[in-house]
Length: 163
Image 1: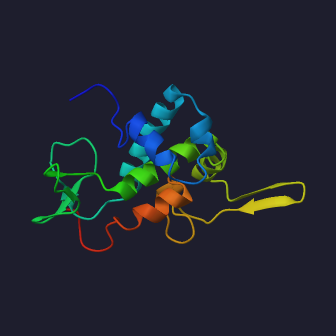
Image 2 (image 1 turned 90 degrees about the vertical axis):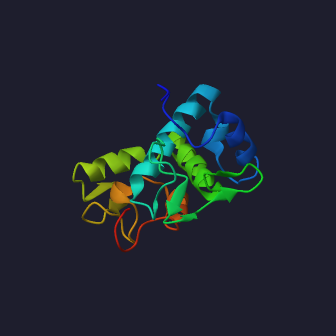
């Protein structure tokens, strides 16, 4: 096992994917060190956001993906003859990295975590949903940005238990 913090995307993979997606201004404006740190944090955020369907493909793998459901491997690359991390997970991680680098959500999330229910500055006010889950059933404490959370929903464990 490596001492490096794992990530679902290398900088090269992220650069190729970022060129295909709209937005991502904060990610594209960051230097490679900042990008890598954000990709590592975003990968961790995605892994910790939910319990996911199925089980890890390899019980010893560091990250939650690739996954297996019983005898069914969820994502398989027949060319490489290997289980792979779904492209959607990589997109979610890149969106999350952009959100981390943008920094706009972090102060609000910290306030909510500390129990802040609402705040007002002049004529602007914000109210937050009580509890640890944002309105609409989002991830615990709102750890994922909206785009990443929308993607994570497809893999989220809905009923039953983790294997």
